[in-house]
Image (cartoon, rainbow, N blue to C red; front, side, top):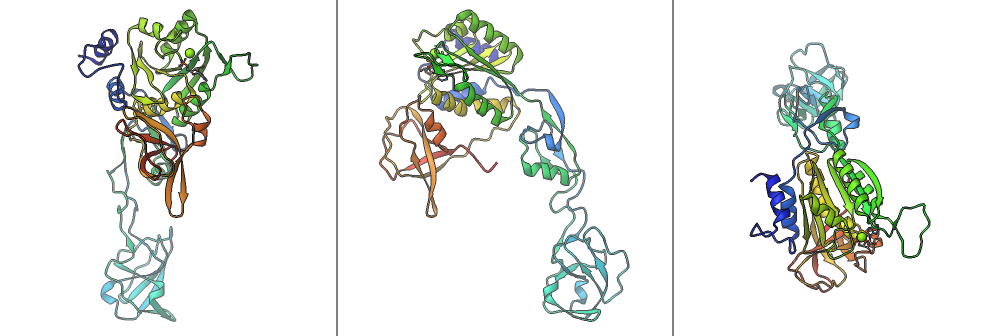
Amino acid sequence: MSNHDLLQQLASNPSCADDYDPNAMSVTQARQYIQQFLSPVEETEILSIKQSLGRTLAADVTSTMNVPGHNNSAMDGFAFRHAEAQQPLKVAGTAFAGKPFTGSLPPGGCIKIMTGAVIPAEVDTVVMQEHTTTQGEMITLTKVPPVGANIRLTGEDIAIGQTVLSRGHQLQPADMGLLASLGIAEVQVYRRLKVAFFSNGDELVSVGQPLQTGQIYDSNRYSLWGMCQALGVEMHDLGNVADDPAALENMLLTAAAKHDVVITSGGVSVGEADFMKQLLAKHGQVLFWKINMKPGRPLAYGKIGQSHYFGLPGNPVSTMVTFYQFVQTALKHLMGANAMPTPTFQVECVDAIKKAPGRTEFQRGILFKEGPHWKVKTTGGQGSGILSSMSQANCFIVLDEHTGSLERGSLVEVQPFYGIC
Ligand code: AMP
Ligand code: MG
């Protein structure tokens, strides 16, 4: 069965697959379902190194040169023939980085050499300056290094023809330097993913407008903007759409026609006076899940035409958690990037944690250093509307389905929000 057929079948007849229960999905299962419907964008573009940060390579990069290009000195010292190490040696000239020694070296001779300078063909070893004594033009080795010492060999970093960066790699600052070190000025990358989002809810008001009683400011569009921006996609904020079926349908179809991905927040929960769900159901390719997780229980995934659709719950923390736990990886996959799970590690939690077994929780935590050890504390209240908890936090405390309440001092899994770059 094609992916398209499977999606339609699951959407129209959720009981068709044995292991598919839209009302009791584990986090892992939901990720797996989404994954099988994704295929990366195909179009590519050529960018200069400076424009390429964060972009995904669309082709392997192979080296057309050796790095280093010549045997060169790893030390300031003297280059000499190891067989002559025991005799006084006459300094026949100097080799600088970028200015090789061009003369010929008579027997019993050596060359004063600087770090990075080319090693002349006649010599095989470099002694560091500190292990020599000088009398006029002559030097004597006070400590003889092994043959071949202090020489960086041609191609020892990178050899001609070697794949230095693979397709699917997201370019980091070191890669930009690496490309330059190989004389490569441009790279082929996948085009940027086009992502649109809008929020849904009669109660929502955009910043800059006054609030009437019962209304709230639309915050999700701003956290979504930030999360999408951090991923380097091309984003389009389509605003807030009221709970009006015609307006929603119009916006949804227009957005899907022009974007690779459409993300909405709000209106996908069960049993509410929200129209989003009914509308999406009408288009026939959207799956509605209740995921065994907290926060972020309702989630919709599907396709509207060629566009991928993610319907996130409206509660501000749920929107962010579901974005990080499902949408982010999916977007990376669509960008052509190699899937790299976000690292998690275990630390001691200095607070007691309340939790019922049966679902995965993504509590908000603050990693801090106590003496030599990293520990974590919770941000306090864990309600799905408490957006300040995401703002204070620097990590998720990930508690799996089997975990129940924990005493203070327990080891917990954390997933940091930020790395070094
Ligand atoms: P919903 O998913 O539409 O049922 O919304 C769940 C809760 O999230 C409700 O309290 C909404 O008012 C709130 N909410 C929905 N969308 C947003 C938004 N864009 N910004 C802030 N809060 C929202
Ligand atoms: Mg709503």
